[in-house]
Length: 546
Ligand code: FAE
Image 1: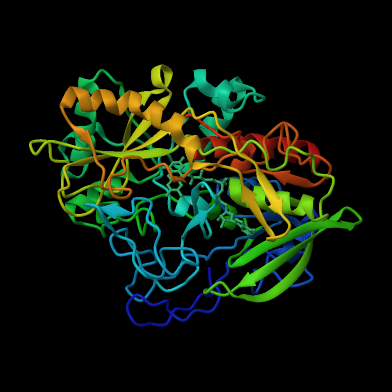
Image 2: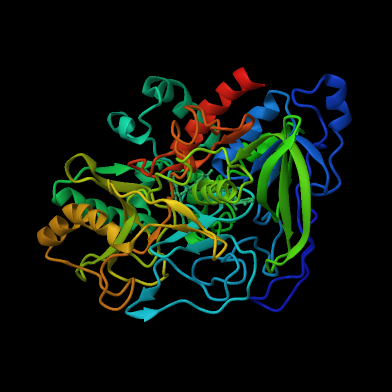
């Protein structure tokens, strides 16, 4: 599957590696190719995409939107090349594991940083970040002036680093999520299709009640219910049977060994195990990891020229390639797609993109906080890293709070929450020509509505329980984690920067198919909605454009 070769190295240092790639079908098959053309392409390509290659379809990014597009196009008989700036993540490091855990972040943890940037960066008032070797690690903490945006880097995108919480928004809220999309179609066809494709399941309620690893969630439930808030189980793509076996000691531990933020070695059904595995099995999908797209521009005769930088594992550019494609799908995530489109419009590569490009970006109202419980309410030294439940106060207070783990390995008496709130603020990406970079107009103060909405839950719980907020998790005497988001959405909004199916305005054959389409908020965790929308859009594109 990959040629990445790892050599043992000193602990914590990156192994020497040749650049990895995943080779599927050959590239040069005409869109909708005939059977003979297909047979000619069946031999796996011998390496990553070559300079000067022509491909029918090029997909930028291998997260949810990109994976759905690749699978459905391949099933329709179209050969696809996926270009991914992150690594393949299919080869163990010196410790025999592909990913490191949250307690011992090493060179694999962060994307091109020399110091970790943990979302929860203080403990007991002390900073916990540490030095690490610069490496193309799996989690990017991308810093803009007013917000740090966490994103997955590698084949599988955000599915490599996320909590796997697979939540379909309540139907009554859908109109606020995607106002131009037919809700009946989404709930009858595309949400079910996405949930099936992702392998979504729910925790066994009896095991939930019994296991020490969800004591923290049971404490969260008790406090929510005593204050009159609905407590709901949340589906997840983690293999719940595997987690039971982890507890029984019959398989290697993963969720129960604090593996989440920097990747999960076993039980989580990331896209590599679902959509991308199916896509590769068609023989029509090739993936080039450690390849970053920097430009897309018309090349005449209905083709686009795509400029790609090949990266080494310390981030150095080792080659620059230009390939052509008849169709290009932007699936680089909300930030990646928006940054590319804004730059390409401003610098004259794609001048006919409309003025909506870069607009309508939101943080899904993310805000974090912790509560200090009484000594008779321990949350457990053992905690599963996979969240399984939340507190739903959306209708009354504009907040849905995930009861999140704090898998430190010691008893903290802390309850920890990631709230998704109805924050109305929207930011815009713009090109700073002098600095040669794309900037985002978000301001930290714009989190205040999120804090106010989260307080509708936690002020009440604190008052009922006689407890207080933790002030030692995000700094010294700082209650709110208001500096970040895990859920970037928007920047190329459906029906504004694109038509109602993701076709970019101004350019036939260019599409957006990721979180950039969604205008800033999904009311719950976003990847099921990103996947379902991609399923809807690609079905239409295959039916009408190919
Ligand atoms: P994404 O998955 O981000 O994929 C984009 C891909 O494009 C990435 O692999 C990039 O490396 C790649 N890329 C970017 N720029 C380029 C370029 N120029 N050239 C080549 N490749 C490029 O996009 N959501 C949930 O629903 N439930 C959760 O429990 C949850 N937990 C999360 C926890 C964390 C720590 C984080 C960071 C996110 C979490 N999310 C969760 C959010 C979720 O992962 C995110 O919404 C989706 O991954 C976004 O999907 P996209 O397809 O838009």
